[in-house]
Image 1: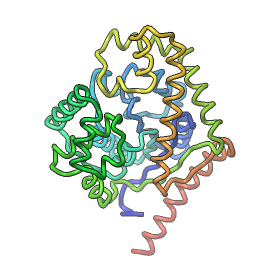
Image 2 (image 1 turned 90 degrees about the vertical axis):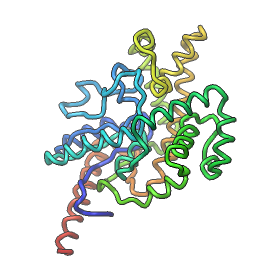
Image 3 (image 1 turned 60 degrees about the vertical axis):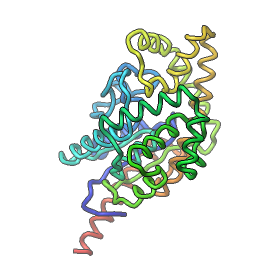
Length: 325
């Protein structure tokens, strides 16, 4: 399980609309913890409804970190997340509290726990911007073909239309003269930064999850999502990252084309369902996740089992330390 001297954290993972936020907050209350968000869109200020940020009442007095930290006209990267979130987690641990890391952005969660280092800094930002402009100018197929010639293994796992991953792979290659496949292989060999206990939330009946997603989107619209998006595009020139957020991208596209907003709602539901599948594919690769099913178990039972899981793990580590010493 890694170095026992490392800081211990609990991670709450799972697809969107599975109830992660509620569980994380209640775990923080039980364990004397604070929440560190692991959501690549909740970092943006003023993007509240579409990212399903917990409001003040829902937070139940628990401190939340890595939410509302930048404006929507700023780009953000996993490298910056690792740097800033690890400082937050280290501070929570230093104060004797338990970091509860919650969110559906699997890449951010893995990178934080592993303490991955990425090519970062101003030069990396400039390089990324240039590659993204080339992608937009010449199209995904052309840059994908270039990637395939440089790193066939990465190209095989990437769709030509996946702008973010195609550009990221090329950025790593030109920024470090190393293929992203080689980069990923090396990072898997790095020691963990934190000792993490993982809790996963899902639904055995996939349709129930999709129903929750559809209900959530309908609630977002009734809560003023369209007005939120209109306000954002009037105030900001949204960054490439923010403009790709599900819920925002579809409404912006609908407004620009003068289409009925009902079409945006349907698009958002479809995009969110597809996203939930990708999230599950990502998280299922992590064999350390202890899965719970919202349609089979009550919230209180999941909360108690997760608490016991964390405390039992802590007890076992201490016992092993005593034996080793």
